[in-house]
Image (cartoon, rainbow, N blue to C red; front, side, top):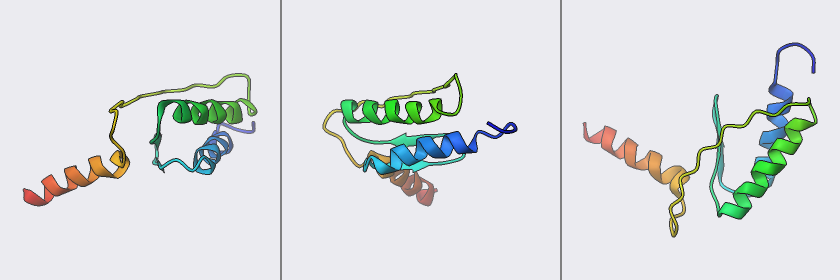
Length: 88
């Protein structure tokens, strides 16, 4: 990979996430996905494999919020905080 930029590798990983069809959001530091455990882990593996094509090392930070029976929380959590902020 040329220079210090990781944007090509990051873009490859984000492409895997977006093509998965799972609800997702990418910001400056993280890409968040929502779904069942096995489908999310398959997307994580695919994203790591995509990044691995750019070098011999892949670094991964993974945080899980496991709440059986819940969905739509990618937006739901933010909506609840925004509602609280409007109350202030």
